[in-house]
Image (cartoon, rainbow, N blue to C red; front, side, top):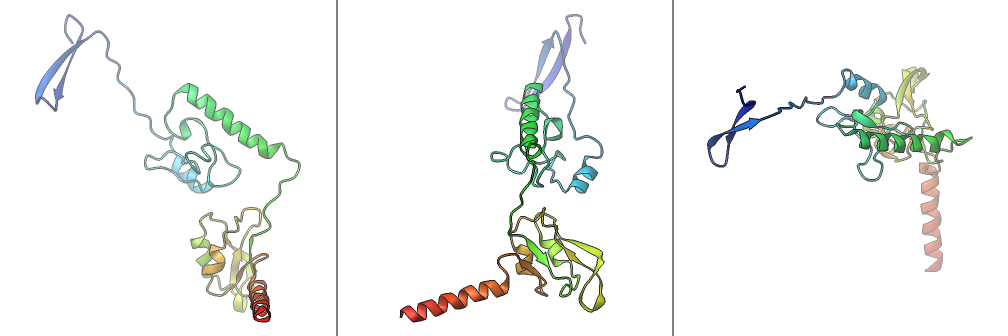
Length: 199
């Protein structure tokens, strides 16, 4: 601090010299960090976070206010540090997206979902670990192969029908509705029979 005001000395890396700046006003910017407990909240809601710890949207261009988990939306400083104007616009967008769900009398889910046969499930947790949407869970009230306590369960309303758990299940306990092994095999047999008749 000088009589003329504030003097700040900084190192100029290109010229390799110290530069003294006489200023009338010096404003120190405070760093913005995620709120305390955001990691625990993200873990409970199964929401991804970026490298700085802020909540991460599903897609920066296609779904900027949606989370990867359906029915949850992001706005404001939970997303990343932003000015008030941008926060208001994002909050309006998140409210509009939420209204598309709330305004419906009935919500329809896709018919192609994974379904677990508990009698074949060995409780190996493969489907739980492999699912990109964290949908399969082990329910202790279900019995698996040989009376094992706990079998996998897929909530149809949350399942995206990607089929990864079906492909990875070593016990073949998970099947995709409308694409069960028997259905696909029947289609292949019918196709092979048709091709042989045409020849």
